[in-house]
Amino acid sequence: MSTKISELKTGARRAAIERAEKQYKLHCDVYDTADRKAQATTTIAGALLAADLGFVARLSETPSPFALAMLIVITVALGC
Image 1 (cartoon, rainbow, N blue to C red):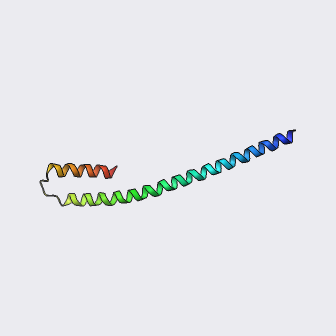
Image 2: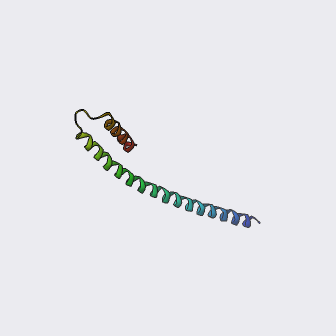
């Protein structure tokens, strides 16, 4: 009887380890996908932010309030 209980415990441990391995693999895949998307988004935002700051350098000495407001909104949105 004790060997059957021991076999059941061993089987339960193996099943738990297999479930943990599958869950770990799933988490790794999800984090890898999120990391790739974040890298692409950061690259695009960095390029747009550089273009935005290049535009700021070309503004006249007294830009319109609308232009200033739009630049601030764009810069904050890209920074986020």
